[in-house]
Length: 522
Image (cartoon, rainbow, N blue to C red; front, side):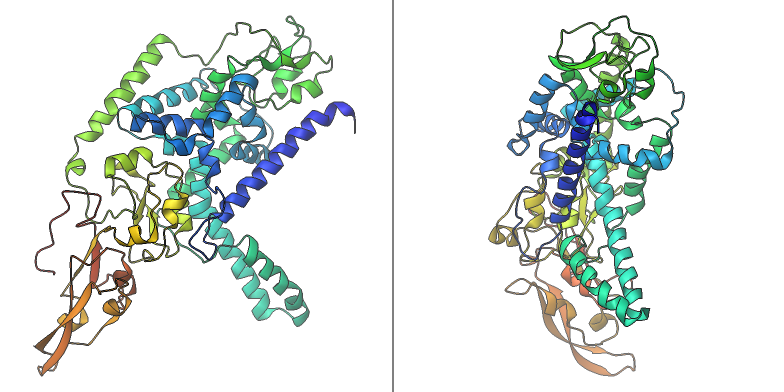
């Protein structure tokens, strides 16, 4: 191999290793059989300058968990958008998916790249005034959310089905070979348990749509939509180390402008540092070897995507006004009672400001209790975690969701602290509960209640059964002061369909003005 290709080889190796590290941390986010996570599995979010800046603006203070993001930003001030071309797992995924979607770029409006600056400004201004948008636009949030809620569970299910078929219907020699492979996959990459999630399709659609846009233009998201790329591009303006064309009037073949995956080279073969992701293709493929990387004098560059004053002012005013429009909805005064947040979640406004909708708390949840909200917390609360007790429950001894949260939206609690937190309260629907509605004995909810003093207890009552006979039966009731809202009673209720015991966010610890009790159900 010729020596000039060595830089590209290093870049591809960096992409491969960084993507492998990302997948390793992603898989390690799954439950590993203990209540302590080893390593910073949420590192990808802690090195994200966009998340660090947006959440710090929303909370009016710098979040120390996101301190590693400063390294990426400082490095970009020196080297430009190296992160996008050498590290970013989303960018790597785009590069790898390109051959599958075709290599022909479409003719798109020249002003389209302005959108990434519009989205960046809108994200930051809205965050400052109380409307969190970063979780919908940040590339890592979109990627991890899509993997957590759709791709990873589907992958686990497909592998399970494949090896189940070979085990049940394959010959003995095939099973002898496949079972060690299956055991290896179980111990390394397969989920600890097969999970299901609500609102899978919206999360998957966002990720798959961005991948599909590669068919229209190479690195379409990075060029036109990515606010993180826009932020790093602004830092790249000041980078002393950059790729430059040593011939300022070079326009012989324009091969480099056609080749550039980020659209950073114009028809005069000059490099725009705000777009350049240091892929190094131009260094290798220029027939005149005119490009070099190193210290370079900053030169003025006409930016097609630069925002005009009018666009800047309009975007800033939109970001300022929108949070106030969202704040006057009835939902802000009286949230939905089925919006149950995980233990350790901050008060609702602070929680929404910090949560980046990454889905890591949902992936690590042992009981498959946490699911992405749709409109229960308003449009701005979409993809934030909420407890759905009929699907799963909050394990009494587990504190993993607080450990994995990258921004502190869910506080890291000790086991004792977690067990003292109330996330909701249960109530009994007497029209469905078997001891009330049919005079049929049932003790399932009380048996599964994890609190030491049992938040569900029984009273003796004499009632008429279906045959009109008087029978003495034990009927359950909830002790509000002991119920923590874990949801296991609703989850384990043996009735099909809707449970006879339901959990709402009434009495949650994080709210001083908790919901009033539901009359007639206690």
